[in-house]
Length: 307
Image (cartoon, rainbow, N blue to C red; front, top):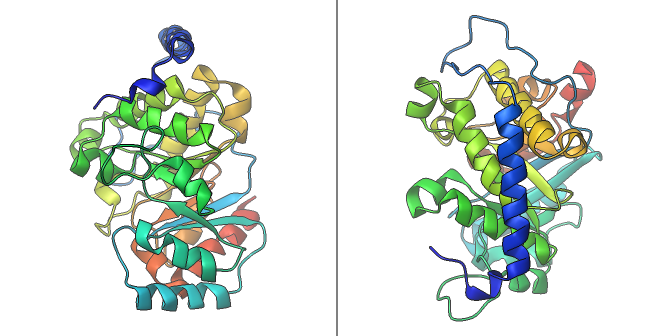
């Protein structure tokens, strides 16, 4: 799918060419990462790929996906408004488009609102799409991009997603950038290859990482009840942070938040939160239950204890 012609300026083209050249050179010089990650617990101790972890505030997002009615959304908002939440956590919820305005008008300002998708450029003759300008107009601060359901069900490719992210950021819409591998890719030992390829597409388009959160969501764990072990998740998060250090900058690698998604719930969040490079969560089904979502938000206390 091609981007609108308005995005294809010579300036952006030159910038993308320069970035691609830089990333390719850095990747060629970088040492290879270990490839074999298994679905079960690793028999070896998960290696720290890089000593640093994210320095940003803990982040928890709730992706409501294509769920809800006016009544159920109202009930969920009431539960969230009544919840006691740890103060040092950034919290975002992503309702379906048609309920964003309802949520914005009734949800506490403590929680920000995200869209689940956005068009690649300025609005116009793109039936069914929503522009970044429209999100800004209704006070929507975030958008989720690259989610596996958009990649593998809708058919969005890496480059299209990267360009979406760049345009959203240019309009001051912050981005939750999703990456993750299929089960067969993990079993084939391609987890890092897949995640780095998806990361490169974002890096080819993004110049401002200050308003980006990366969400690692192994596709085999989304909505299946299977969860990556804390060690598996930590290993990938650390590898992604190391990739950013090599291919973008040490400053971006240190400051960016890398969150985990994939059947996160109130029972498993505390153990995951203890891992050094897990800076929060992107939550699916459990975010539709106010008390459970609050428990996941408050799992930041486990990270404090682990630290």
